[in-house]
Each structure stands twice: as structure tokens, then as C-alpha cells.
Amino acid sequence: MYQAFYNLQEKPFSLIPDPHYLYTSGKHRKALVKLRSGIMNRAGTTLITGEVGSGKTTLIQHLVRNLENNEVVIGLIDNVHPRFDNLLQWILRAFDIEVTTANDVKLHQAFVRFVEAQAAQQRSAVLFIDEAQNMTGQLLEELRVLMNVNVADAFFQTVLVGQPEIRDILRRSDMRQFAQRVAVEHHLEPLDGQETQEYIQHRLHVAGGDAELFSADACRLVFERSRGIPRLINSLCDTVLEFGFEEKRAVIDATLVNDIIGNTSHAPLLAFTTDESVAAAPRERAIHAKADSRHGAKTDSGKSIEQTGQAGVESRKALDEPGSGGFEDVLTRLARALD
Image 1 (tube, helix red, strand yellow):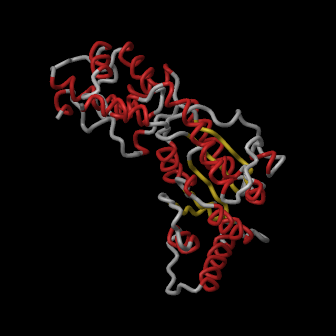
Image 2 (cartoon, rainbow, N blue to C red; image 1 turned 135 degrees about the vertical axis):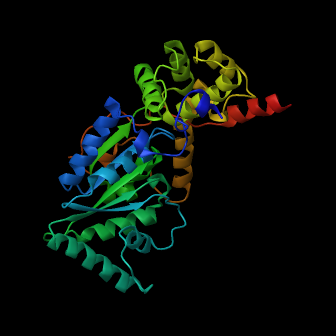
């Protein structure tokens, strides 16, 4: 393995989210400020979106580790899927509330007692839901009803974290009641070229290695190929280090990175995303929205969440910004390489 050769204590570019490796770019700091502000100001629902691999889960794990104090108690559901049969049971588990019944009424009573108990200690209950784009309209409606517990000093907040598809869901006319509760919203953008270089250097440093192991030109090529998406940066850099070790390269230069990028049998599959696949992401979301409308869900595709629900929600950049997706071209080229 390359760790010993490059004097690394561990692999710096693991694909497993690890808050220890969080690189707080200006974009990430802005997201953290909005998250903390929304929670401490009891904003109701906070919505954080970002494309696949943009670092949302790492950001949330960092916040959860550092946020819990005398003012909030944290619950986390980190693997939402549409087949959740009882959202309330998952919420109770997220807050470590033990129940011995499956009766909906008693489960709801246990939840209300928990929120009221936190209020008695001057604390609010904050539920983080990761992969929120997988929530159905029914699950979101169940969550909205639970938020009605916010009476007197009792307060229950939610932080939804997911891919941009969750915004498409919330723009639907049948979701306007939930959209009204979104008080803070932020879209996590990919890293730029300079941030990508700093990100690579940061992870190498945290792993105990030489932060300058990758040349500036090598970092530039990594940025161009990954488009600044952290997961793609990690995938490509890890592969480059493997081959750098095999060739006993003391420094990772642009020539090695370019060789890896140009060889489909070496580079990670996701590192081959193209401009066409980037542009395909909004088109794919539009196809899904059209499919939803065929099943009776009205989509206000031309409206923002603020227009659909709450006039006072913070303004943000235009929706449907390019991101990862559209793997048909990738798979086609992979098949050709295998042939």
C-alpha cells in the first residue's frame, strides 16, 4: 500500500465520510453558519442541498459532533428510503427514546412527552434527516404534522439534507404547507480550482503526509476532471497515489494524473463524468418531475420554494445548477474499454 511510501498515517482520500477530514472552504463555512443560525434561532425547517458527493454528509456529521449543548438535543436519521413504514418510530430511535409499543397514538404521546421534557430544560429537539431526497410526499406530510407539536415553549426542529431533487419535491403545489416551514435554505456548491488544491493539501496534512505531494498542475488537472466535487477528487487522488507508489514517484505531477485520466482501465469510473453528463442532471430531474405529475402530483416547476410556500424564506441562487449525474455515457465508454 502507498501509505508507508508517502509517509501517511492513513489513506487521505477515503470515500467514507469523516468529519475529521472536513475542509472548511468558504462555501462550507457559509453552510455551517446558516445551519447554526437556523438551529439556534429555532427556524423550523432548514434545508441543505448539494449534488452527489459534494460533502453534505461530512458537513452534517461535523455539525452534529460539535453542536449538541445545553440548548439542543440532536437526533439523526442518516439513511432515508421511500419504504419507511413508520417515520415516527425512526424519529424516536434517532433520539434514543425507548418504546415497547407499535401503537401510533402511544408513539405520538411518547414523542410529545420527549419534546416537552426538553422544553422543561430550555432545550429544543433538532432532527437531522440525511438523503432527504428519498422522502416521499407522504413521509414529508407525516413530518409536517409532527412539527405541530411546537406549542408554548416546546420546540421541534428539522434539518433536511439531500440532493437537489428534494427542492423539486417541495416546489410541488401539494407540498406548499411543508414549504412554508422552510425558513433557511442553502445549496452547497462544488469547490473551485484554488479550493480543490487546498482540499487536497488539507487531507494530505491531516493524514500525516506532505501537503505539497501533489504539484499545482496536478491539482489543476484533478479539479478539471472532478469539477470540484469532493467525492470525485478523493476517488481520483486515491487512484493516482496507488499508481504513484507503483512507479515510485516522489511527487505526484500533472503527467501522472493525465496518464491516469487518459486510461479508462486505471481511472475510477466516476472520474470520467463529462460536460454532457453534468448537463444531464437537470434533464433527469425534469424527467422525474414529469413522471410524478403523471401520478397525480402537480409540479410548479417554474416556482421556487419561497414562491410556493413562504415569502420570507431567504433568497438564493437559481435552482437546477449543474452537478453530477447522467452515467449513460460513462457506461457506454466503459463497455467499449472492456471490449
